[in-house]
Length: 403
Ligand code: FAD
Ligand code: NAD
Image (spheres, protein in one colour):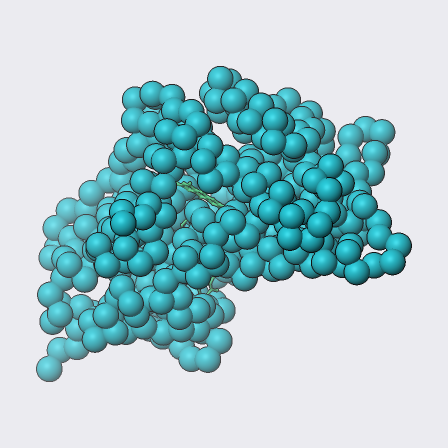
């Protein structure tokens, strides 16, 4: 009997989960074996990690057991860490075993990029995955508890520094301005003693984004007690804080978080793929150049926008759309049909500024502010849950509580 072709999907993030879901629907059980490999037995919503890091969400709301939404009877689930991909041998090396494949989907997500800034790897926390985010939440609360316990407390230990005012940094600060007052009440600390400082190298935070929306975000965060330092380049990170600007000013803090940029998973380089800024420049059908059977998705892929000549930004929205194209193309390969080109449909960008504030654009550029934007962000988050696990998952983990 001829064996079924094996499709191996590496990484159960936005791209990996949605590709698996779509392949389950598109392919009959007898057509292919589907294998999903992930570091943990849970999937976390990367787009919610700033909330996990600030502690404004129950951490378990931001993760889902993979087997709750993908049946192990239909998909072989392997909880293991990918160590290397050997494309020339169609082989993947895991920490505890090895796998061969007929078709490979690489959706291993991003890694934090420190651009070689001295001390950043040693002294800063990263909002990189579920565990690194949970650590930030614990560290911040520890600083508050220690401050109260210490007979000679240092007020700078309470300060929280956020380096890089892109979307991750700004959304994180939005959570902090809501969390810090709660922690102050819990630990009997005056709110005025706790600094929250965002540092951005560009002339404004959220560089390149709509000016009205940037101004709204800045004002909203400042009014709730955050200090926004723009046009301030971080030169170095030390145990005490960031060294910034041409005059090497030291901004001290007990919690230092770097949100200054991301790049593709370092396994891509280790596995010998040709890279642009740490990502694989994929063909229009999302395959890795030179490999007929390897698709690269999500934050691992450098996908060019043919109209602007620039790459699309790495977002969950894009990762989910990659998944749809990839599943269609694997189906096409199995049926000897032509492959489709990836076309990005921009549905807008909405950022939260805490639980009840936000800003962004939707569809054709309509601007949203305040509670409407915050509600829209929750709708987007919950829509994903619905797509992944239907009404059951939405009711269990959703942000909008219908009852
Ligand atoms: P991920 O979703 O990050 O998944 C990667 C998966 O691979 C993870 O499950 C990980 O555990 C697994 N993995 C990694 N390495 C290994 C290994 N060696 N072995 C096995 N498994 C491994 N985008 C938006 O569109 N809207 C938003 O509102 C938004 N908000 C964001 C907020 C934050 C705080 C951050 C950090 C990002 C946000 N983004 C947002 C961007 C979005 O989260 C990413 O673009 C998206 O998660 C990319 O999906 P992915 O599938 O490529 O990677
Ligand atoms: P980013 O690259 O978008 O932002 C990093 C910021 O750090 C930039 O503004 C940059 O100027 C700044 N920076 C870099 N080096 C610096 C230095 N030395 N000193 C001071 N500032 C410095 O990274 P991100 O915010 O992590 O976002 C990553 C991706 O995820 C983006 O594509 C983003 O659109 C997406 N994302 C989207 C949302 C959303 O849609 N709500 C939320 C979070 C992230």
